[in-house]
Image 1 (cartoon, rainbow, N blue to C red):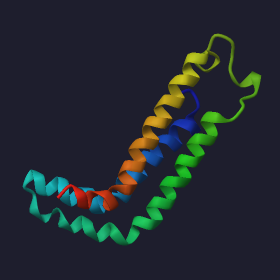
Image 2 (image 1 turned 90 degrees about the horizontal axis):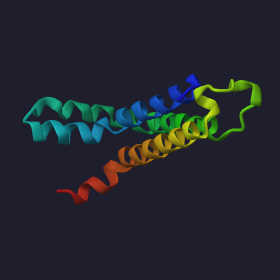
Image 3 (image 1 turned 60 degrees about the horizontal axis):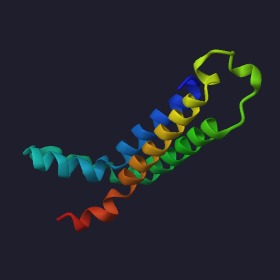
Image 4 (image 1 turned 60 degrees about the vertical axis):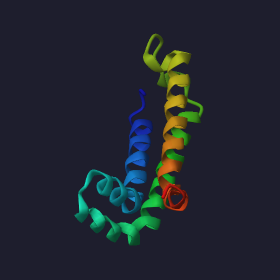
Length: 115
């Protein structure tokens, strides 16, 4: 990923999705590891809607930076961004991250079937 804004929004959206689902995933993971005081992460539940909105906005920005038309002068001939393979790789990473983010954001709704 050549573009810093594109890379930053993608990483930011993944981190925001993990934080948004920490209230639900965290206690389960820590309980499986035998750490019982991790139930304190449920206090993050109140902030989940706000963090989810931030996640979706960052993911939208990542899609914008990935799929927008770039001016020809932005990519110097022979650079990483001038090769079509780099664009395909960026899109694959974005879509993989999107699947991961959707799994984190929807975890509280489908986790009830895991028990």
